[in-house]
Amino acid sequence: MLMIKRLMTQYVPGMLTCKDVDSFLYDFHEGQLSIAENLKFKLHLSMCRECKTYVQGYKNAIRISKEGVKTAEPIEKVPEELVQIILKSRIKK
Amino acid sequence: MEKIKSNSMLAQDQENHLIDKLLVNDNKAFDRLVRNYSSKMYAVARSFLHNDDDAQECLQKTFVQVFIKIHTFRRDASLSTWLHRITVNCALMILRAQKKQRTISLEDFSQHYNEYGERTTFSDNSGNNLEQIFERQETKTVINEMIRTLPEKYCNVIQLRDIQELSTKDTAEILEISEASVKTQLHRGRLLLKAILEI
Ligand SMILES: [Zn+2]
Image (cartoon, rainbow over all chains, first blue to last red; front, top):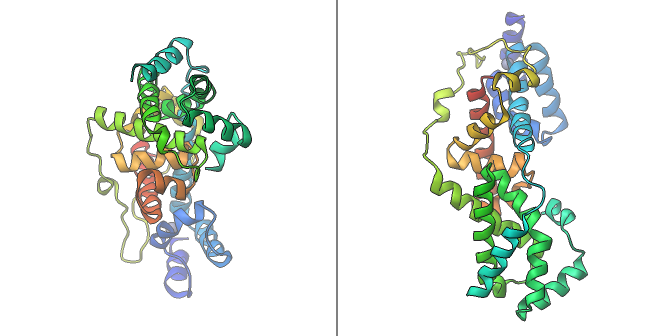
């Protein structure tokens, strides 16, 4: 598989290298690659286990920041006491 | 800031009416302002600050700013967008003051390629699922802490773009950097987080 990958990335015009995958990754995730770029990106992933894992890790990192914060469970309602302090701070001025 | 607008507590005409009253120093209007908007603002502050005490301090500081600045409010943005922006700025100021900058740099985790541009660092963790990762980190608080210890510029864009899901444009505006910088810093921040989490 390694040799096939190397031959393809070196000799097939337009094939992405792993390095190219890095520079396309952000736009891939944002859904901003052109159709052709998107195809090339996915083609590379289909034959490169390293990049496939790498891209999955990138997606996971994003999900983890979202999930981690969402479950932090902040208080639902601002306490009346705090509302009063805030309102008083205006009148003091 | 579509997301904030759609979540706002008041309809547009009600908001306009409220602004009119605020601009003539109507006490009841201020009462309404605090009661209608503070929960949403609190949630924003809390997503940056991760403990209730800091978020409450942030909310107080934000309203001090709001009371001072309300007369400079121009209706080119909605009231909720304007409040959101002040809340974020206050939260960032508090974070900045607290931050004992741990210097983790992306270079420590930079990618390696061989002469063919092939990835040479590889960890076989394809079996990792997120549940396992959460378990491994024990609590989500640890993850929050990790995000907070990222260098400030990465931490801020992750907060605004990935966690609060603001657009690139709005993030650029709040942080006063270009949209291109938002993209670069977000990408680097994600990579750094990925490297720290070893995923
Ligand atoms: Zn690859």
